[in-house]
Amino acid sequence: MNINQLKYVLKIAECHSMREASSRLYISQPALSSSVHELEEELGFLLFERTNKGVALSKEGRDFVNFAKKAVGQYEILEDRFLTKKDERERFSVSTQHFTFAIEAFTNVIKKFDPQKFVFSIHETKTKAVLDDVRTSKSEGGIVSYSSANKALMKKLFREYGLLFTPPMQRETYIYVWKDHDLAGRKEISIEEMAPYPYVCFDQSVEGSLYLNEEAMADHVFEKMIKSDDRATSMEIIAKLGGYSIGSGMLSRKDATLQGLSAIKLIEEDPLIIGYITRKRSTFSLYGKAYIEELLQYREIE
Image (tube, rainbow, N blue to C red; front, side, top):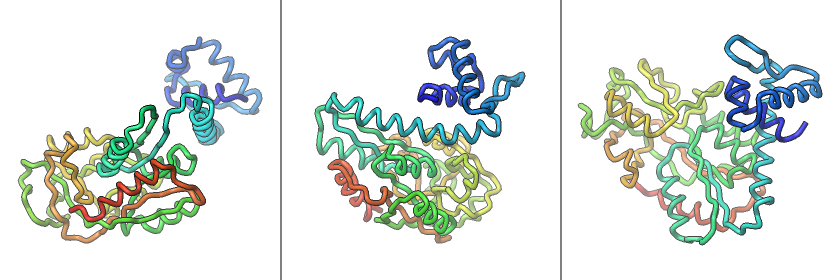
């Protein structure tokens, strides 16, 4: 078993096709098939089942892929940090749920230090991915939140993942609608008044995703719901369909995709606790410390 074989398996699982995977990997299909067959022989079970629609992971293959993802991720971290260290570029990486202030803090750090050579990464992603990124050292820190609906689960995950959570801010709950919406301009509103309109939320796409929601009111039953995994897509849906989303009320006017939104205070109280996570017994880099300092500037923003 080698790292290339693991990468091959992940690419085939992603593409559901040997032919497409071989094209993306820039190797011949026979060579790809042979490499996977050798790995299956070594493992003693089939990773993929051939169907008339391509290939699909076997039961054992699904378990294998879960571990392979972690192994490849760790290898890429080692490769990035040590094998490419000769280029002397500064490095910093952070993962976050969909918070614009987290992105602003990231750009502020770059502006503050203005390094001559650097490779910085910010991953705006799903809740589970933020936790995984920090646990596996893909990111130095992560920005996550929880509400009353998923507080117990999130704290449990922090313990299981060996993460420390520091909550610098608590935010009230707001409804976001487009500026030309019939309800735009209201000072406050009830969640029941929003029932005729589609609710747009970020798709967590994992088992138990209800309890990994980054939005408040996660346990409310929404009659009309649209899930999206992209901020620009969500804004387009809200604008075109008269929909709404739920957030902390912290709208960045520097973000062009948010300039058309109007925030309305939600009458139902479900405060959002927002904080940063780090690995236990880890220490922040110079850029990590500066990033946390930038985050703390948003505690009093209204």
